[in-house]
Image 1 (tube, rainbow over the protein chains, first blue to last red):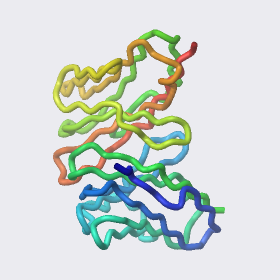
Image 2 (cartoon, chains in turn green, blue):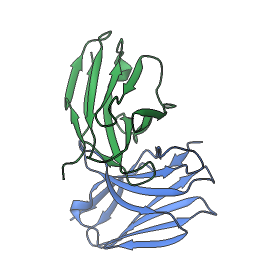
Image 3 (tube, rainbow over the protein chains, first blue to last red):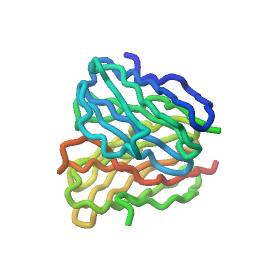
Image 4 (cartoon, each protein chain N blue to C red):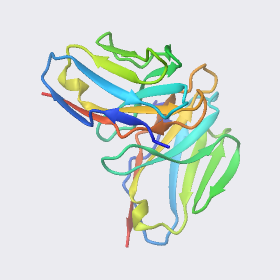
Length: 113
Length: 113
């Protein structure tokens, strides 16, 4: 079956702008995760959804970051008033339940100029 | 102290040799351990998962876990140039109600023909 998909694959924006990043998990996976990966570092956890609810948002760096998953499938990560430090690869992963293997999407490369 | 630590490398081995990748973690309550492989510009791909002390073998890969020493390793036998990638160690803190993974910074492996 299809894997995790993410759009766009690349996003260039200007400082202060708003961006939305989309993740479409593997069909039937109830758990969805967002991570952020900076160059030379491992992925850093942002938020975890179980179904429609955010079960753990402890990794969101500040209130400019917000994510939703209204129907328990597709998720959108929203970043307001982008800053240059937000530039990174944003990875989405899904798993069948909350404790099983996580499968990663190809990521969205965000560049804030 | 970082929660999950890896030597960033690069670790260079000749083709056909055994590559040994190491990882330590700080939370004694951690229950699940994963090795992901990440090629340059690509997303992480699961290589091995391990949950119990001891060794787990899958083809040319062996994961080793020692919870008393808070240490997990990955051995790659008969290393091939195609194994050249960054290897990420990830830990699930099973004591919490989340499946979020804590990643190390990754070890870059170079297999020279």
